[in-house]
Amino acid sequence: MKLTERDSEMLDGVYGEGVALAMRVLVAIGRAFDAEQMCDISRAHVALSNQDADIWFAEKLVAGGAVCRVPPTVNPGFCLEFFRHVPGLTQEDMGTMERTEAAYRALGAQLTYDCTPYLQGNVPRFGEVTAYSESSATPYMNSVYGARTNRESAQSALCAAVTGRVPVYGLLLDENRKGQIHVHVEPRITDEFDYHLLGYAVPRLTGLQTAFIPVFTGIPVNVSPEALMNLGAELNTGGNVPMYHIVGVTPEAPTLEAAFGGDSPGDTVVVTAGDLAEEQQMLSADGGPVDFALLGCPHLSLDQLRAIADRIGDRHFKSEFWVMTSFPAKELAQRMGIAEVIENAGGRLVPDTCIDQVVWKHLAGKKGVTDSLKGAYYAKRRDMEFALRSVGDCVEAAIKGETS
Amino acid sequence: MKAGEASVVGCRGAAPGKASGPAAVSSDAICFYLVDPATGTVIEPGHALEGRSLAGAVLVCPGGKGSSVVQADGLFQLSRAGTAPAAIVVEEFDTVLVASAVIIGVPLVRCSAEDFATIRDGDVLDVDSDQETVTIR
Image 1: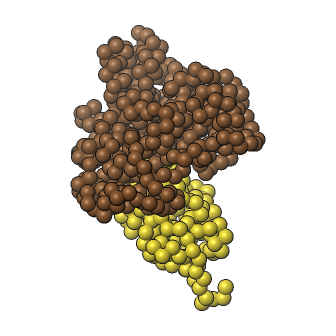
Image 2: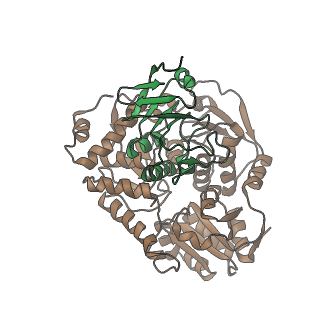
Image 3: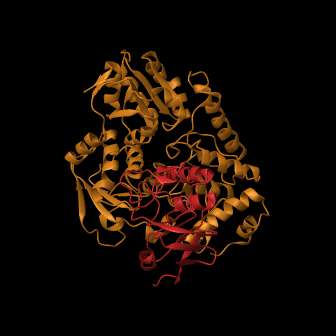
């Protein structure tokens, strides 16, 4: 791989050991994928996780004096301020998140703690070269905006943010952005929950476990951002999909032919309403009494919060009702009276927080409802069991204290 | 190949370093999050290496799988507990696995499909990512 003079200086430690470490990681990736050169990035998003490896690596970069040339947005850990007075959390639990925050602050990251940066705060234009980790973010960038990113790991995205550089390979190159398999969605699906089911079902129905680029037809032209957010999150939970096309919707797929870049589309995988129902049935716990609802994997948007408030009306929750959202969406919800409706009903709006965090340990061993297949999958190791329902049905379940 | 003979095949190095160990050959991709750090044992239900320990072995598998976060944390926990594989030989690289191996310091190489297929479970392998060779003994 050809390095510029400045790339070589970064590698040789001229800018400090932290930058050199980041460059070593990127050079190794470039070498592995036969990249010929590196290029600048304009944006980055790091899947901060508050896990041991995350803290260890971020602190190592800090100790080496690294500061991000391209300040990345970051994923949520958990909100220190919100959970400081929630019983059951130990000083050790709080201490880990304090270390994570200190490390990322020292690195100069934008402390957004939001897994949907592509909806607010870190939005690219067509063709921008970026480095995004996080399962819903990578496909949203490539597919919906036509920006370019490989499926970065949390650490490789952080190295890119530190150096401002990425090796040129994979989805940064035109020839690797062609569709590979045609997926026709037979029912006209509009509820955002159906896109959770669709995303999880497609890797199973295609039988593909290695990375692939599906080309969808049958998805309506006015599909909502939240539906596409859910689709990407689940495509990367059920499988490995860094990019997709939707014919007539996403910018690199004006036609089926264009989406395949002139290659033959081959066989078509048809997704039926029955397939989606089957997906829900396979992954969902049974109905019955529910102790809690936990929504917001990925973080719910302002529109979704408004829909929840509208549905609640003046009723009250029997079960615990938790909604994870971004800090800006919570702020707007407070200004607009949406938060008040949810909180008066007994619900809680939680900013800056992920479902896969220690703060939910009080829900272990209990039965919940959620709309997120991804969330339910990751929460298994925290001993939470979920019935999978649409956001609207989750609201009803928490009001009644049970779901059908 | 007779006992005592060694064959040397070329490879592409990703994570640098040299290491030797008995080959643990898997037909399934690996997610290090589903390996028990205390013992290095694969605990993923139905995995080709379920119940086998990777500690000190050269893991030979098609590639990596799992999210951008859990692969690195899984390998980190193994490394900290001293139960990580000595080296990893794959057929396909992916960014997440490459970044994880580089950061945590486990030599990682890719072999051609033909060479990959000649490695038998229990062969002793010398992996040299820097010279880009795998010696099969």
